Structure formats: structure tokens, C-alpha cells
Amino acid sequence: MKPRALAAAWLLACAALPPAAGAQALTLPPPPDVAFDPQPGTRLPIDAMLRDEAGRDVPLGAKFGRAPVVLVPGYYRCRSLCGTVFEGVLQALALSGLKAGDYVLVGVSIDPREDGAAARERLPRYAALLPGGAADIALLTGAAPQLARIEQALGYRAVPDAGGGQIAHAAGFVVAAADGRIVRFFPGVRFDPAGVRAAVLAAGAGRIDPAPSFGQRLALLCAHFDPAAGRHSGAALAAVRGGAVLVLVLLGAWIWRRRLRGDTA
Image (cartoon, rainbow, N blue to C red; front, side, top):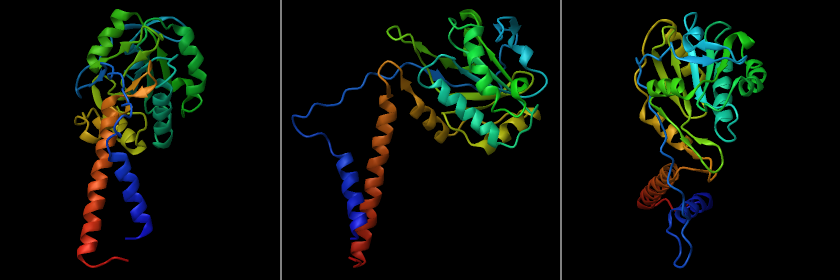
């Protein structure tokens, strides 16, 4: 076998081996009980009263009506996942070819402790990356009862971390039509610009996309993060280990077939 293939096989085998006797097993905290499972066609509560960046009371529906809405739940003073998600959304929109006015980007803080000041801190940075600037974005906050209505429509569940003041939550966003119906769900932290463009155009035409694929749901699983421990979920790590074992099996089958053919170069 070629040295490069042998080295790859050795590394994969080492990754798949169980820990040596006497070695301390790595223990991870249980994954947080979070969820983000919106159903296409569900209507968001556009009458839910929130606050804009200036602290004024506005219904969620004030940001709907003129264009499809890209809605990103999270919170503005998050120290782990939210900034990565929002940057992923902004990057996808910037590369999508969509023009100013084709959509409205709406952030909704899931933390009722946040107010307009937290939103104002983020607004200039995010608006600078959008074709329409501040006209294409709104960062909203709200009281717990109103946020709960939005989260219920999104199939969204977050878990506060009592020790560190952070909130464990899943990653992703939805595209909604101008009438508030959810058109498509994008899980994860990095997104395909072409897919985002297609979803916004579908929302503009009033079409509802199908539910996310298995691959998209796997991306959401891998985005689960425990802010208290600073680690990804045990389920995500198990999926990675399973993938490594599968690659090892496939590589072994390839080597076996080459040996059967007498190719030992």
C-alpha cells in the first residue's frame, strides 16, 4: 500500500479505538434541552408587540408586508453562537445576488432582559453588510410573554444557564412570506447563498418550501453548543465519531479490494 494511504488508515484507526485501560474517560455534560423545528406554512404571530432599537413599541407585523422576511432568533449579547449565526446569514445574503428591498432582515432577541440599547450596539455593524443598509434590517427585543408566542410558532426552545447568564439555544433562521407564513427553515451557522436566494424568491411568490432535509437537520445537531461547558453537544460528537468509523470501514474495503487484485504498489 502507498505510504500516504497507510498513514491515513493508521490515523483513522487510532481515532476509532476505545481508550486504553486505566485512562480516564472523557465525560461531557448532557446536551441542553433546546429545539428549533419550525413547520413550513405556520403563521408567525405578527401582532406580537415588541420593541425596536429606539425602545419604541412595535408589532412584529410592522416589519412584514413590503417584502419577505429573513427572521433570526438569538440574542445580541451572546458570547458564543449568535454572532456566528448572524454573520453566516449576512454572508449568505451578501453573496446571494439579492438587491436592496428584496427582503427585510429581522433579528428577534430571545432574552427578555435585553432592550433597545443591546440592539443598537449591533445595528451599525450588521447594517453595513446589507445592500440597503439600515433600511433592510430591524433588531427587536420584547417581553417574555410576547417572545414565547414567537418561539412557539418557530418550534423554538432555549435554556437559560443560571451560572453564567448565557442561554443555550439551537442555531438557524427562517424565511417568511410578507403575510407572516414560514416558507423555509435554514438550520446551522453557515448557509448556501443560492438556497437563501431561492427561499426569498419563493417567499416573494408565496410558495412554501418543503421541510428541511436530513443533512440540514444534521447541521443543526452539530450547531448545538453548551455555553456553560464551552463544548458542542455529546450527540454532535457521537455523529463525528460515527463518521470517522464509517470512513475507516470504507478505506479498509478499498484496501482489501486492491490486495485481491494483486496491486501492492
